[in-house]
Image 1 (cartoon, rainbow, N blue to C red):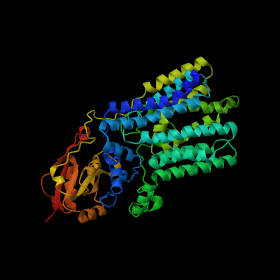
Image 2: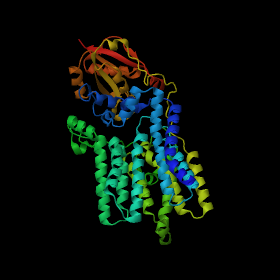
Image 3: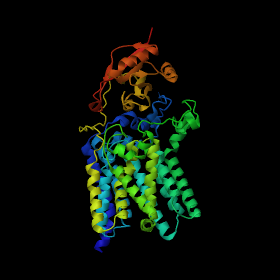
Image 4: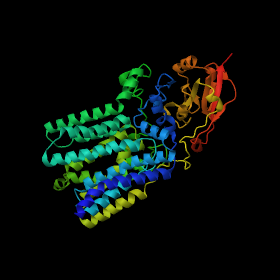
Length: 538
């Protein structure tokens, strides 16, 4: 009876503890005010809810972030608007703590193939979950607004559900089409909420195709999974796709325009290649390059050898499979599904963009995969124990996370924005805002988060910059000419001379002193934000 009670309580206990610990960690890290939040995670839901896209505000396609679906951002937008800053960080951290519980559940599920003892199984699963979240972008992302730690909840839930389905299928050949479809909806929601999670759709489908099963069953799996993924994708992103199609004739605008041919963007498929491996050798050995920080896969430096270790262990595993005598010992189709999902998702990631933040799910699963491979490759209790201890010690001691600076002063308002006094006296105006061309450089730093604090009658558009070089899109010219007067320039002080030069090309000239805008974000950026009036040149 006592044993049954322990088994019954362990899962809800893991969820509650994971959420509370991550909530407290989030608060201890401080208030997150990074580039992405300032650029679009707060502005996009505001713009959608207030019907500002292509009406009150116009952004050239090079302001690519404002065209990203705000589905997950509604959560953070609501928290920022209705909760204190400290409570916002705590709730967001608790939400991200669900990942810890899911990794724990997945670990217990797969470790049960090798470890029957409840205490050992639970201890190893806890270790897997802790090291999984102790990852270079996952750990600093707890309580952050990037959404990588939010969307991962759906993918991990999908993995757990599908693992259960596969185990039952390979044991009894029983199929539930409803469960197959509902489980796949989670993956579709993830991909629809954040398009970069499409790598896991590719990894799932590619890996699933290679599994040995009768053709009829494989078709059933395939049809149900595709239907579920499509339904989840539409559920999460359908409304936004319709909005983009209605405005720009491309449901993913400005992405994939080589396919959809929107007249508002060149006919090409935009991509971000700066972190991709160069050459065959680097591609084949890529985990060893980025693990030691030799090849950047993020804006900031980190080291983490978990993927290099996975690479070595998978190499040994595939060599072992070639030995017919060992192949039967290694045969476990449910495990093979997890391995294939991991491998092909990683290949899709390395092929598409190689940005470490987008690999959060595999960062969390990598310690478990290492444990499972060791348990299959190594025989004997003592050898297994020392091999597992080596993994447990090696991964966290060689990991240095990305340094995400936060501020410790929470205050009563999340951004604590203070606008110049003359803004309240002006019910309508047009503002030219400096932004980074396709986010190629970190400067000029985004200031879209300020827009919700202006009167609702103010219109905004942007001047794209690549370093200090700028261009003025034709539609921005017409937007300024047709927009309400007066006109203002908004940027950091070091970019204001370039903004005045752009204004001159629009036949605008300075019309008075600039006002200063202050917010808590400037504690990180150390910039002076100016709002400067201009008027038509005589």
